[in-house]
Length: 97
Image (cartoon, rainbow, N blue to C red):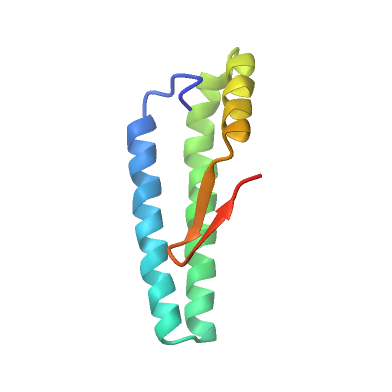
């Protein structure tokens, strides 16, 4: 998003932070009371969130990616070679390789 100068990047990051918080809360709920209902609720929540993001943000950002393919590829390569760590949950960390 930085590579294509997406103007709403700060808001987008904020939304991901909110999502992380919501997932951690739901994970805590599941750890306290593991049930199929909580699992189904989490699955629906994530599916709805992802579909909404793809339909709304994907369309918006698409306008900014045109002609920026080389810069986007360089940014992705930089992330890949940096070996970023991606938290899967607050209980574990997975190395992104």
